[in-house]
Figure 1 (cartoon, rainbow, N blue to C red):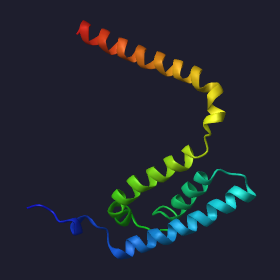
Figure 2: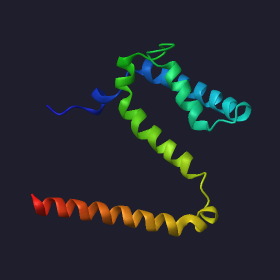
Figure 3: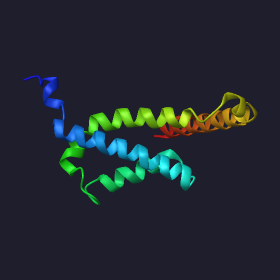
Figure 4: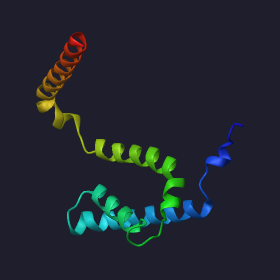
Length: 121
């Protein structure tokens, strides 16, 4: 039987606790950034670890599992956007050519090893 979208949704209480933890993490991350000069992502990770089932137990393992689809996609997108927004193209222009050459060398070497390995098998 096909599952409905509602079967995949986490309980409302879990979503509310997660929202509370996310807001607290944002505030703590900002404090860490200003007073300790830590990257924001470090504050988010520390707050998430503290709120989890191994410290303050604001979220249980079951609640975290039910929130997985929400957290994985959205959090990874947010982290990528946050990290990417720190890079300016004008700052990267001087290092872009060596990085691209290194990337080309790594990809070429990987393909050569895979093709060479499969032809020997």
